[in-house]
Length: 210
Image 1 (tube, rainbow, N blue to C red):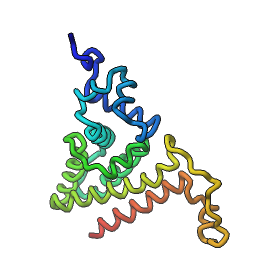
Image 2 (image 1 turned 45 degrees about the horizontal axis):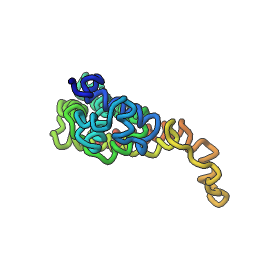
Image 3 (image 1 turned 45 degrees about the vertical axis):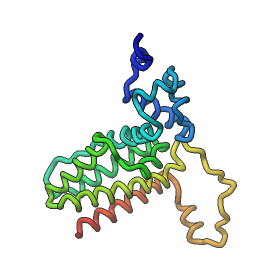
Image 4 (image 1 turned 90 degrees about the vertical axis):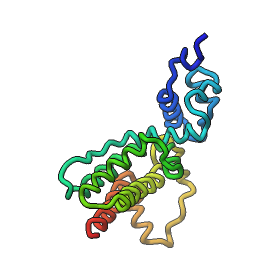
């Protein structure tokens, strides 16, 4: 008799994709091997043929999301700031498409070859501009950390996350600057975009000056 996973047409990629769909829909806290098995129409034990444990499943989600980023690393070597910007913008867009995975990306180290390829290619582009490997990877990490941290703050207003209770908003009567900022759009999607661009511009400008 054929194994259940083969009869179900399962592969590691299909398992990870189903897990990502579940997290996108219901949140990371609802992900379990039992529930994922039910989503795929198999027993939970069948999944262990493709991911050895829950930790490997979570690492796979990080791989699936981060390896999707494909920045353009071609062009003249001196255009490395533009390539870093392209990487940051693409990375942010991908994280915000999957808000339930952002905390995993922020806290779990990248382990797979597919996920490491993005950092490798981006750092290699910096290498062509004269950066030693250790400096190139530090720069890539700095940009990725900026993006991930910004997305963690922004994800609270992203579809798929529970909305904050506006009734619990603090009274800003004694905070005129904050009150004026809120009235001027602080916390809106446009504000998140502006904050991201401000921080990214500052980082890239500082790196360029060095």
